[in-house]
Length: 381
Image 1 (cartoon, rainbow, N blue to C red):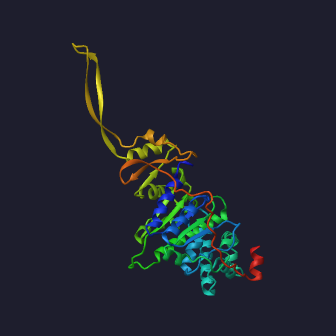
Image 2: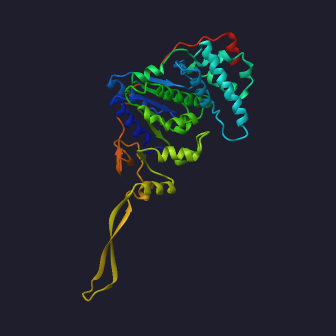
Image 3: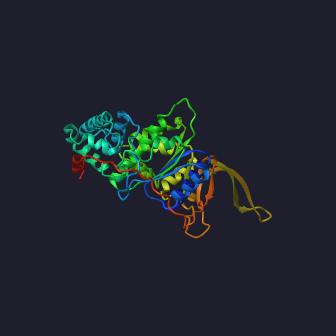
């Protein structure tokens, strides 16, 4: 539930991952006011670089997500960002044309050496076979309008991941342009991780997806199933089981299987859904208990006879899951939840990493703006 303490737990895990030497990439569609400062402090303490990226339209040029990508990777990025995969509907015919446009655009940009979002747009602006695909072209224009990617330089994701940097990416839960870019960046991070030398030993990478329904695409979702083999682990946070039915292009049953059944460790806070609380109670395992059974009949001494009966009950009761305490704003309050997957299911409580209110927000990554041709600028406007 909102306000139960998911952010506190994730910040603690991420803080320790940084101190343990892991690269950390955090995707935040809500802009938490504490987490960037907490992780900047962790990076400073660990002696590693910290990069803050804000994808929203109010910011300036910061990074080039296409840097170092080949044409096949760029095509995958565009298909993921624009949700172009076939869905088994009548619209698949048009999506197929959009996928063709994505492949052509990726090859054009690679051939021209314009490996950036604005460079990609400029390479495509005079190609009718691309601009005639209205859905694809409209989405590419929206993506190219975002100031955060209006550069050929800026933050080098490949280098930052290799240097075990801490990267905090602020996105959006409602802006369509920003949500497209979030999906693209997540797939790009996964491409970089999977592109590393498989025979070499790499420091673990931790990727945090807060409110992941705003970032998962079929490409990213597929990657979740194999990313563990690439020295990488994910922290997935969501508010309810209903979020698993809200990932565009992803079958709800598959999402449920990947997130609920395929995650080794789960942290559960107060649950408002009785059905789901009962399910989590069942998977908590069982423990022995003894039930006192007394008879209503009295013996010759006037005492009731009784017996003890051994039974097995759920280790974590359903009522406990639906009545876990919520943290308040009072000083010293903790987040109380249930931990699954580390021995027996158990109650735990955590408090936030202390961050003084006077501690400033880290500075954004800054890059030089891309200089587009007058024709491309006119088309973009």
